[in-house]
Image (cartoon, rainbow, N blue to C red; front, side):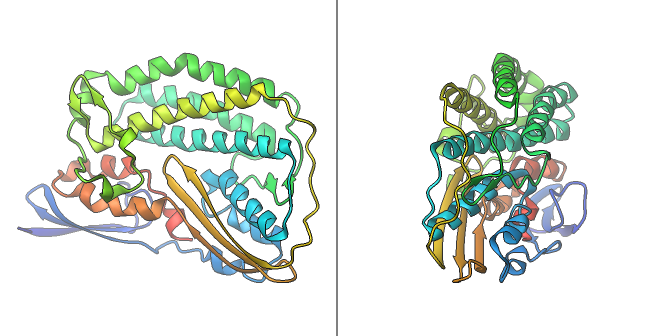
Length: 336
């Protein structure tokens, strides 16, 4: 039974961005949850209509700055499909590497923010050290730490910069050597386990479609909570992506070639890109002059927002900030 209603937002330190959270409370327990978004709407998909490809892409990468490389890849491949443009093997190789880097970058940010929310500063700094080194590498490659505009239709703006591959190999080895320590800090700390064991438990995995069965782990403490399963899943995904990069770096490809767009004029393309958080979807329509007729994107956060209510219901008010952070919800993806 609801005894009182508490409303948070649209700006609040517990929230992952501009949104409203209406909580029906019974004592200090949450029994009903309502959410509202749209307080930072930027209408990016609408503003690209009628723009040439280059101008449209500059806006598309701002849908989610942390995932700009993934969005640039999706947009570029959609244009290439419409214009029937084939890219070189090296471009595919570079896109695979940069996609893995983007994935790791996002997950390390998530892990650092979770450590900060829980007040575990040693863990926060341990993760942030690797992420800052990774951002330095992205800046070496693209000239920027966010919103890169590096991958473009037909290829990439330029080849890997001098020293990038060697420094990336060093970063991968350093991260893999440190992985066991990070895993121990996240998974085998008694204080951490006692805090996380039942926090944000979701019984039906269908309530949060971005969490796969593989992310639900069993430890010596028994079945873990949703919050901890997300942490374990993200950490293991970083290791998996680092191994993918390591495998790619063994390959040697010819020089990069930026292809001119093909003769296809106008049309539609529907593409998907699987990430650790869920699936990015993009539907692009170009007119005969290769200007954008329409753009529709579907982000992982559209599924993630469905997990807010089941994750919070039954929990204590003091745990709201940690549970919301654990969902890895990105408001820019929703208010686009």
